[in-house]
Image (cartoon, rainbow, N blue to C red; front, top):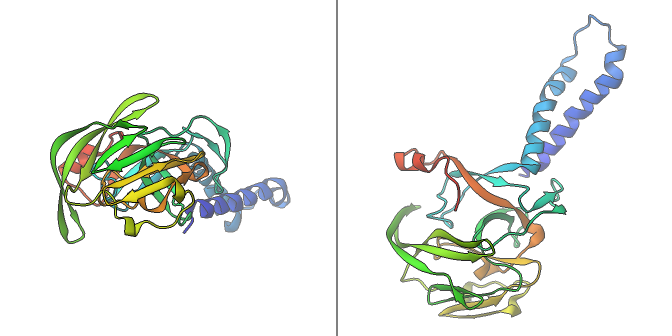
Length: 275
């Protein structure tokens, strides 16, 4: 279901009724006559729908985290806000950029349209930008020949379906144009860095080299390389390729609730920024 399109249609419809009443129906209606219900209701809803549509399209849009791929940064059920203007002003619905303001940076957590199925939204962390050489060998990430430092931070456990998963938690430091930026990742040290047999054909596949130790990829112009923070439980650019710039929807910046987890620990995360 394309909620943005439905909201747009409802806003246009109620706005058309409001305009028609203002220019035509109200003039032909007796002064003491009540508004018909089919005019009253759309006129009442129009301002609310218009405000929601404008805020959602140009300021901030809510998303819900559906999977474990961004643990421990984001947990299943987290409701987050995505900044819609930080990278530029885009046309609603079609997401065509009109006014560029900035580009995604390494380390940013970004919502984007899934290249395999653009009707579906994904959320991952930007690892590489255009021209970068991204290497992930033996569970260590290197960008342009420079390793992203990792510092052990104990273990991290979570429930995945009916399984209880235990991983190792690390603080990883991304190197971006704004300087070093720390974030947390989870790794299963027994898993391979990548499973080459699961890599799908994708545009720019010739820019990558895979083996059981990992991979190295050169990011094409106008594209980004994305990975999940839960490194061994994430379907990301390792397996389906690069994200075009016109698929970017915005930068995730704020956790505002989690209906799936009402524990005291979850409430401590509510209202926090996303690193």
